[in-house]
Length: 276
Image (tube, rainbow, N blue to C red; front, side, top):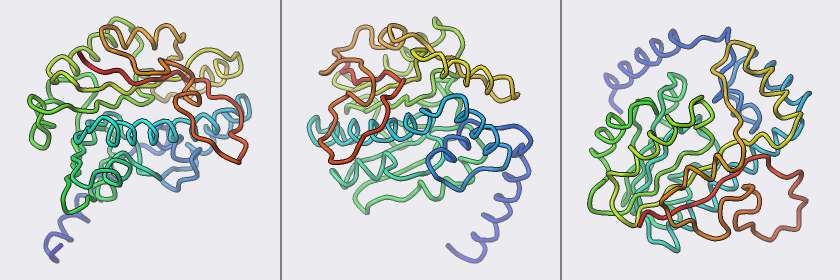
């Protein structure tokens, strides 16, 4: 980066920070806090601690979700030969991001991350790393606008000729209406070629403490997150060939042997489905 480019970046950085509201908790920053990250503010830590007080299992769910992403991406790259990933609702960088997992298996993998959070955009430089053979790109776009996502992603990915791994990891709860979710998933999947995959998980209302903690979080002024029933998550895979072991609690999706205690079960369902 030249001195002129560095100056331009720092000016853009200032503009992005000025647009970040640190008076209201934000889900991406709270998630980062639960995972032990540093990209969060006191308001996020306070909301995260209150959530933990009501539902201590949330930190385990955060770890399980990261492990599920790792296993799913590695499987798609290693076993299914997927070389393109579209990860929507990226969140803040952490350990084993999608591009890191995919490019360890396939250095030529191409990954596009999508988010519309200014703090995520600010940290895009951390995501925009790649092997020399592959590509990693970032798209500033909203989940509610699939055509814009696909148009921007098509500048990096071949969305018509080669299978794509579409990732919707823990973000559909931000959409209240079930019918809208199905429309968004269909709008993202329909243009993708046969042999593409949907990898998805979301928190499920299978624990009273979880539901109570989420209700308290929603009352903080942050963007609400709707916990769904397991069958509602399963409905997102309509028309797809769901891979074994199905749409299940994410800690049970192809778990790996470990000498360590995995902790409490994850109150989230997820799976991987292949487009015919």
